[in-house]
Length: 434
Image (cartoon, rainbow, N blue to C red; front, side, top):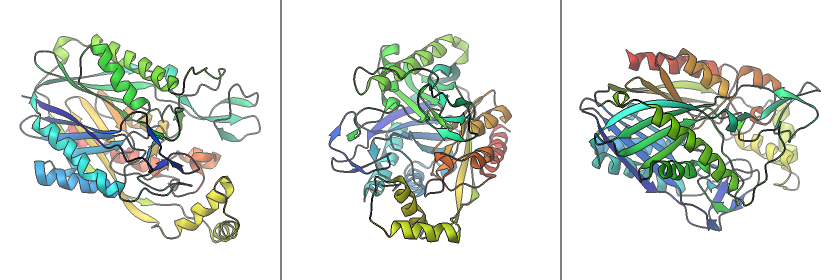
């Protein structure tokens, strides 16, 4: 008999914290909506899985490790069966430093036990349940932000209806994945959604917000007409955003209009997919499993000539508004960071649904390859899971250049990384399937 519990713990930082997501530092002066660690615990008497999605821009390895250690100590769930990911909101605390934003000191240490608390509460709330999975299509809301230009270059976010744009430089993954959990009496307990969409954005830059990830949960509850935990986990979104450059810019009547609009569209698609399921699709006899493997990450490093030029630029007058100065600072700061470390690749099984956790902002093409090669009828690929190695571009994109490939602390993946991660993910999926 399947047992499921759900819980959310508030992880909103104090006002005055550093807000990460732009080239320049911002200081939080308001809270538009609170941030949460949203947790699901799924057990079948033989194995128990834990899934947590946090309203953060990224999840450092140290935070994931600390939270998983507490979960194993308190609940006995091993780390390979716990997947913790970040949504990638750009209006949350600086849990890591990036570009012009310094780390918010103490926040990472403060949030780790609260992530574990979310799982502990969900574990305590377990009750008999049935599960099903479904998929929808959100093609109208996901767009590749990298565009090929007439001069042969590739440019990120070139602007609306740019006359020199030839077309997108890569694919999108419009699939909306859904894991649906409800009581035997058909009352919803939780829903885990998965869509490859960077974030929606706009809003007020100094107001804490979970972006469309939170608005999706609220909209799906409105569709169902009752409260339950509705979670949006991000996917392989490294080159994907919500802006359709082939069309004129959308009008926004207020700062959070696009966030709400996209959330309503995606929740509506989720509700349709949910209601297309048959009653017999919901089962309580599902096999569960999890595997996790560490693979080496050989980070790119600046050449001696690049480092000399960066030191000269960085030694000049500080100007955080100058992107070239900011990138020079990034190369100098990289000197004190390791060049080789291990990163976790994870696979979970919930019946005939495979779930992959990848520790970065992975390009859509890599996620599509994993889904195509997966032994499961349906597979979710969750990005920014258990760690964050930054942007993971395809080998072709690394040759083409642009923002997602320019060397800095969060863009260090070498060629071959996407292939290694995809191969490892598929092998782990085959292991949990078998």
